Amino acid sequence: MKRKVMKFVQRINALFFMVLLLGFSQHALAEPGLWKVEKNGVASYLFGTVHVGDNSMKGLPSKVKKALDNSDKVIVEVDISAISPMEMQRRSLPFMMLKNGKTLQSELSSENYAKLQKYFADKSIDIAMFKNLAPWAVMVTMMQMEFQSVGFSDQYGIDKQVLAYAQEHKISVGELETLERQMEMFEHLAIMNDKMIEETFDQLADVDTYFFGLIKAWKSGDMKTLTQFYNESFDDSQYGQLSEQVMLIDRNNDWVNQLSTRIGKEKLFIAVGALHLPEQHGLLKQLTDKGFTVTRI
Image 1 (cartoon, rainbow, N blue to C red):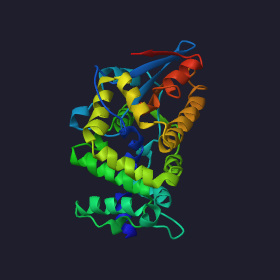
Image 2 (tube, rainbow, N blue to C red):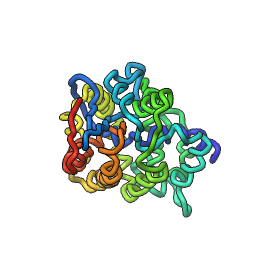
Image 3 (cartoon, one colour):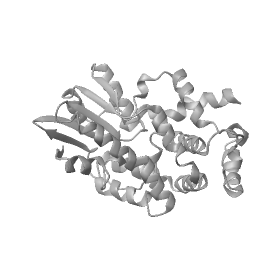
């Protein structure tokens, strides 16, 4: 059983960073959003990304490549290119596996467990395979399966392409947090496991809105629609407020504290998930409030 789990750990980790981005809806404009952030005559760049894509998203926009060429360092959420598959497994499994005799079934309501059981049975998968996995890890597995079924994968994810460009052009890479920090983020949501699974089923029931819509808005750089996605996803419900705090607000605040001491001194290219940018806790407003000149390119 443990061997089966380990086989898909690497695939899960390549995608779990983006789960929070996939709760949002649709519309369009022109090009992915890229901003110049300046102080003391020194320019850095802020680029909102998505973590999976299809063949149509292969290749970074020319303005992004130009910004990368003008930067001395690329900053990403976590540099997964620096983590080997074995290392990924070793560091991930302790977070993904339930402890103290807990099981997937014990962590969910009978209704939600039955829905999960049917979901996997319809795909000829025995839910027993996930017996000892935390609900968030099962959720990410479901998302991954759905992405793949419509032709999307992390292979064309924008983060991965940025990292590949940096490696090819010998631009050094830094990260804003550790793999463990991202795993802990999901652990903090464990108190609302049932709601997490319910939200996942809601999203899977409307893939056009919750997935293709997000990709379309990202491609066009439509911040108005991304902001709409944000507000619809992180609503006033208990789960909406908790997930916003854990997945976005706390992390955004930490990132701004890190970046504000470096922008204006270093030429950075900062690539983070697109929904870390909008609204009052987003990086765009926070950096502006700290006195940086933020201009969309």
